[in-house]
Length: 119
Image (cartoon, rainbow, N blue to C red; front, top):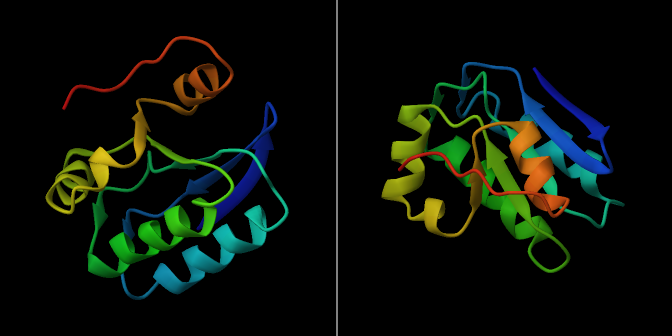
């Protein structure tokens, strides 16, 4: 369901469920927290397989953002239109860096070009 792995020096947390909702938000937060407890660099949250985020899922993403806020950045990628709408309504799209793919996020974080998806 949720997988954390290192890729090119960054932690990538892959959400492998179609939705982050009340029934799985706590598990998502636990996997995220366990993965990044000792990590000091940016974390990439890959939502490519996620099509919907309810208020519990949004709260879980905000938790992830806040848990990193003092020491690093949380960046998102693979945002589906419905998820983007949720992020936009909550203004989280103005706070979080969002990329099309994990590769785009890594390139930007590594000093490469920035490829932001269309709004």
